[in-house]
Length: 383
Ligand SMILES: Cc1cc2nc3c(=O)[nH]c(=O)nc-3n(C[C@H](O)[C@H](O)[C@H](O)COP(=O)(O)O)c2cc1C
Image 1: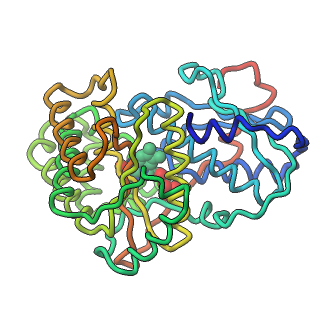
Image 2: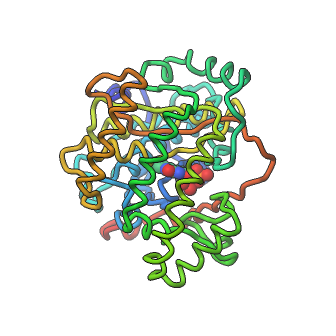
């Protein structure tokens, strides 16, 4: 059974339920919003029923080509569980969570959390929880400084138990990742979905509370212009894409992989929903520790997406059988490289490192608390 479920199962009977103040509720929702979400979709909504927190997933917001079977949303749910755990350490509370029995029914909460009084030591990750961000800039090449920091992290039992694999970005591994990215971006639906989520004009950037913003994405001026053009004239994709953008995206991926300290793969043997939530939980914990050590990270969904999707019984409809076979070939390459077991599948991957530039990235703003909190008086309504 996954770690998330295990820790949930052992409810301490000596705990007393908490009565939360308004400030505590606000702090809890603010912390819950610090999590990464695929394409910054921010699909979760929160509802307080007295002192119990319900977390809903809005399928319409989470519906995206790369959020295959809600896999990305489950990673985020795992991150959210860790965020609540960290934030409540400030309040001497212990959150006891119950996961949904039917994630396909969006009228049911994906997660229900009860809060109990418990003496806690302040989590050393509180600051990192609020400081963490996705860093898409160039990183310095592998260095002793980085290796030393990563080595000190891997002595932690939650990080070192054989599911995190570290690799220097070699030509071979970069090729595997960059070609996987290519295969996916050759799928027009994926590209169109991604263009939709970009917020490109100044006004959009200021008001955007969801989706990806140009400064946050570290886009060049010409990339920004092309995407703006495509947003205005979507049909242009059929002309520009085959001629130019595919090559650009390939070059960009290769560039960003080259300018990377280390690559980190997280693998799963079990592809159940609980295992994906657990991956989110563990990877987020890892990411926050990186932040605490001053190391930047960027999740890169592309390779794991293809590999996981093709490992599953029902590959996504957007993928042709040709690409499924190509992803499988890439999986064999990764497996050989890392010496993975037959049933070991990479599900999430990060590039990590120390930024090689001081250029500041603007953060995509979070939503207002009132926007993400569902009204208690509407409790009968669907979220
Ligand atoms: C499942 C998942 C997959 C992600 N994949 C990517 C990715 O492939 N490339 C990327 O640059 N960011 C990726 N992200 C990061 C999100 O875009 C980012 O979390 C979001 O824009 C919010 O920004 P923040 O992390 O700085 O708070 C991913 C996040 C999640 C949860």
